[in-house]
Image 1: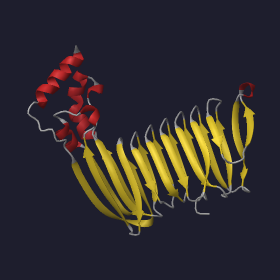
Image 2: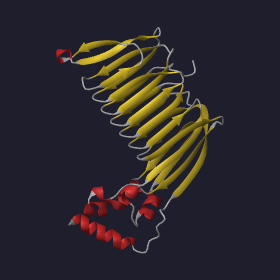
Image 3: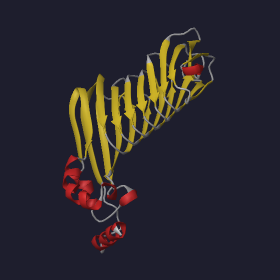
Length: 270
């Protein structure tokens, strides 16, 4: 009954509205040193990060309703999402801020139920120096990063992440997201962790590295590289993998509770 009432009210408020979905665009450029850092805090939508030769960060943003729950209030919702872009030189900070929207919705949500509304999508297209460091906190965005030769710290709950031609350190954690990372060269300590997500890591075939894992018996692991196994835990059911590949070198640390992790060979740039 409650659901029917909600649909009737939405139909009433939507009557006479134009079929065009509201959309809002923002763009800003700030200075950033080649050794500086970009931090991004967002919730859902998409993240596209590319590199260029300028000592600047260019942030282009598109905010639009989520198709999951589009209604006559979507125009207002899009306007109430705040994009905070600040800093410069050593660090640029970017954040998707839903505080104003959530505050204005509070009384309505308490009556309709918290699952009756969906927050707008925020899509980022960012350009930054190749050697600038990157730190991302995300919930469920679709992310693509290409060409960075720096330190990347990435935390997502259930987003999808694709990194290509990475030539630096990666520290990535996801709960149940899907991740694919292709290294041009693995040369700095790197760490991947998931509870029950999927992670695929591609490393150049002749790249030297030292593998260390922390898996439970429910982790599904496979490797194109020759590695050793070590049983432990109750009745030896848990297995960890370790060893020096191609003479050893850079540390690669993998941790999972019940996820899927694939370690693959690639050509890279070696």
